[in-house]
Image 1 (tube, rainbow, N blue to C red):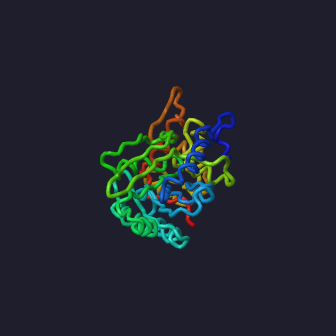
Image 2: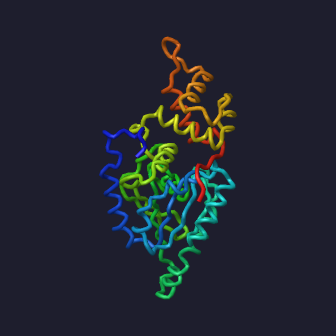
Image 3: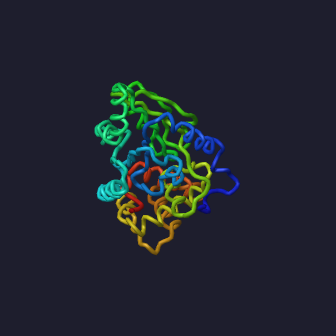
Length: 287
C-alpha cells in the first residue's frame, strides 16, 4: 500500500465487502455486465476479483473519461480488450461521447440471450445488465446519461453509491447500479498510486502533499511538457516531487504567513487539475 495512505484509517470499509456479496447474489438477475474503467488507468482501475465473481457472463467494458486520456493509448487499450474477448467502447459519460454505440453493442454482446428469449416467445423481455466498477470511475454518470429519467447519486469523489439500484433506461435495457468496490489489498504499489491520482481512493485518507509529489515525479519522467505548459515552470526528470510542487506554489503565488509556500493548497490544485484534464490528455499505463 502506498505510504501516503494513512495506516490508521480503514480504507476498505465494510460496505465494500457487502458489495462483493451483493454482486454475487445479483448475478442471477442479469444477462450481462457493464464494467466501467478509467481510460487513464484501464488496468489499475479494474477490480481483479471481478473476473472470478462474474465468470461466464457477457461483459462490456467502457473506457470512461476518454476525453482526458491519450487518444492513441485508448485505441491500444480497445484492441487489447477486444483481443481478450470483451466488447469495449471509449466513452465520456458526462458528455455522452461514444454512448450512442452502447445499445448496438449490448445487442451484439447479448446476441445469444436475445435468441434464447425469442425461442421461448419472450421477444420483449428486457435485457438486464449489472454496472460495476471501482469508486469514482463514473457509474452513476453513465446511468444518468443513458436514462433521461433515471436518477442515481453523482459526485466527483469516491464512495457515493452505497446500495444496489435498478434503472429502466429505455429500448428494452435495464441497468443495475452497484456501489464502487475496491479490493482488500494492493499487490502492486504503483496501482495504489494511480488509483489515488485519479481519486478512487478517498482524499481524506491520503497525505495530499505526498500524493501530489508522487504524481509530479511520475509526470516529470513521462510527460514533463504537461507540467511545463500548465504551470509555466521548467522541470527535469532528476527533480524531486517536492521541488516541483514548491516551484508550482511559488509560481501561483500560494504564500502563507511568513512568506512560506502553501504546499497544501498547491497539492490540492495539482490533483484537481490533473483529474479535470487541465494538464492535457494523459494515460498513465499501457497493456
